[in-house]
Length: 164
View 1 (cartoon, rainbow, N blue to C red):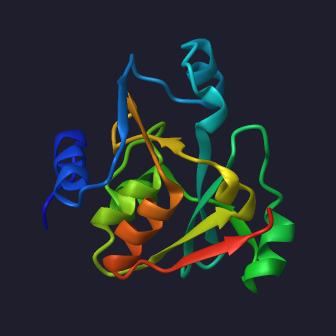
View 2 (cartoon, helix red, strand yellow):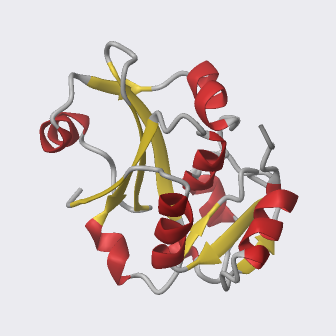
């Protein structure tokens, strides 16, 4: 399996002719640390959470506005899941080949077995672009939500849009 480090992510975006903007920065691990960088389009940077059900049978990567917090009980009802909790760092690496602080839907490029469902907050549809990590927390890539959905969907990733 090919490992999509940030160099390969940018090469793939170029190959797919996806328009993006790249911003390199020091490593960040939280939205608060991202805000401290003073990025020009911080309002477009999204929060990404990796969660699982209590039986470790279903995994979800949640994308939502950076000012929101996820209500796991409400999300559970919307997706018809068993109780939800945050996945471990080991699961994050196993399924998405990501480290803590670098959670991004682009990690799904490593999910060849399609075990992770990408759940996108409907509010992000209004964004011209979203800012996410390119599988590395030392950069942020700004790209259209539609292009991200097309890229991941073309690889067979299940994507749900929900009101979060």
